Amino acid sequence: MFTGYAIANKTSIMYKYKFSIGTNGICDNISLSSSTVGYYFNTNYPIEEIGIYYYTTNQVNKTILPMRNITFSNLYIGVSTKSVTDGNISYKSRIVLTAPIFVLIKGLTENTVYHVGAYYKIGTTYTYFNETAVTTKPASDTKLVFSRIDIDTNIPSTYKENADTYKANLKEILPIVTDIFNDATNVNRTYVATVKYDAYNWAADNNMNFNCHYVDSGDTLRSIIIHELEHNHFNSHMIQSDYLSKYEYAIKFMEFATDCEGASWGQIYLHYYPIISSARYDYVDDYLVAMATDVDNLNFNS
Image (cartoon, rainbow, N blue to C red; front, side):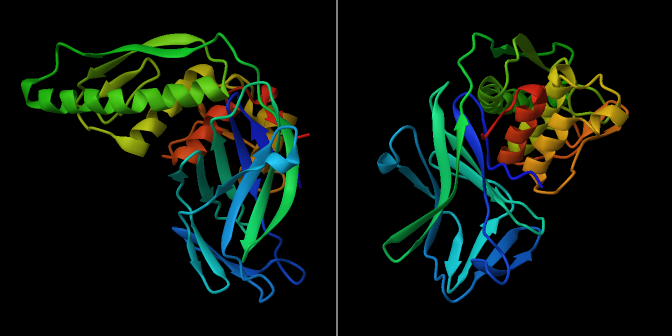
């Protein structure tokens, strides 16, 4: 299995935190549910804190980032399967047998070598492990921009309130989407988002039209927008699926993202699963989708 622990963007790094499991591991066993992954430690590891760290040139100057939004009890921690944001990091557990925790570190500097690792704390003692080095991407002049948000003039009067609400929701979410894309990709395009009305059951299209028949918001709206942007900018979208499923970089990325050996992409019509799918993802997984936009140019750890 691919053993990589980190992929760098321009000002962020996605790091995969993994405990050793089994007879000689930190964890005796793991419980998986739809909402929480539970890690049960053996008696030698009464862990009171977990987190990640990074530094550039001097390991003495570590920046320590604890994961505080998790459940701790006697020899147990519980980590949400939906991403949570805690200062400069967002994190979630993955529901697979190895149960890694994906941690997105933000606020970094472009074109810089970072040493990133995991830690746990027992009493006042920190134990550091799984350190790796990865270089953030250089700054770019390319930008994804939403220049404005329009409301179509032909919206029925009974849906004008919906349209206004949708515009407000887009105003909140579009800066988050552009932040993700401008960090993770080199997409260079300006869009106008337009709120329209259609009685048919569709949410949005890749021309950035949004149907106010149903008003979306929050995580759902962010995932919808990223889905539609990927229809335009996913660089492998014209590759035949039988090739894509065997493509070296796609497999390398998917093994990182799923922690499953040999994981790859599949195709149903114009949808490349799981990068362009009908799923609604949380923040960490939406970030991973954007990172895969140009899968040939990912900065994996060395």
